[in-house]
Image 1 (cartoon, rainbow, N blue to C red):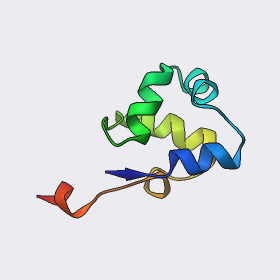
Image 2 (image 1 turned 90 degrees about the horizontal axis):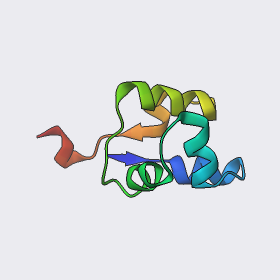
Image 3 (image 1 turned 45 degrees about the horizontal axis):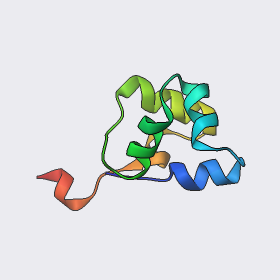
Length: 68
């Protein structure tokens, strides 16, 4: 799964720690999501979309190998 969290954070001049506090997770969780090592729950994805004012589909997209 690909995501644009890092780009959106930069747009808002927000650190991983800032974002983590806003959505109620650890900074390590935000880092793992940005690196593609962790797929967020539906609730977390919705919280992230609310912070950035984007839809979940604008923040996250599946890669070809995710479809198999």
